[in-house]
Amino acid sequence: MKYIYNLLIAIFAILMGLVACNKETVSTQTDVMNNMLVNKNWYLDYIITGTNTKSYVGQSTYFATYLKDGTTKDSDGLTGTYSVKVNGNQTQLHVQVKTSNGNPLEVIYNIISVGDSKLVLSKAVATGTPTQLYFTSK
Image 1 (spheres, rainbow, N blue to C red):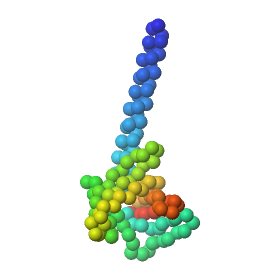
Image 2 (spheres, rainbow, N blue to C red; image 1 turned 90 degrees about the vertical axis):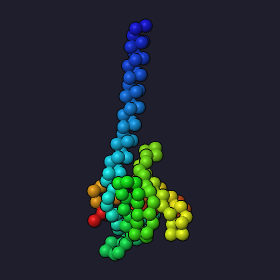
Image 3 (tube, rainbow, N blue to C red; image 1 turned 180 degrees about the vertical axis):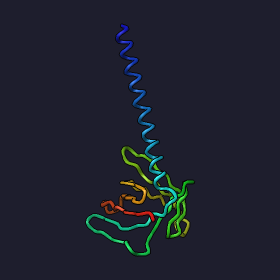
Image 4 (cartoon, helix red, strand yellow; image 1 turned 60 degrees about the vertical axis):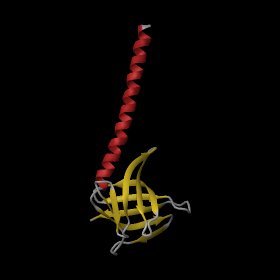
């Protein structure tokens, strides 16, 4: 009986450790991604949709800025808020802005990768083929 009791205690401790680690991993993941995004102008270099690539390299182009206070602004004049969230195994960037005529707009991007100067986002579109957006910070 003592063996079963000790075994149950050990299983419970392992399960609690796994749950605690998992929560910490999600929190750490969003904190790291958020810290990599903030206080930089992210300039759009190119977009890939299916086999089509559109390059903006060397041109005056779109950029977005994500500020530490959770606000965002872009070169089109849109302002709003953003948050980094984990949905399943995918880290996402949720952006809520108002269009020029005051209509709310929410866009959810999957974060493919983020580094000191490179950002790759993926966005689902109506056609079903996701669009990947490649940014650099300067």
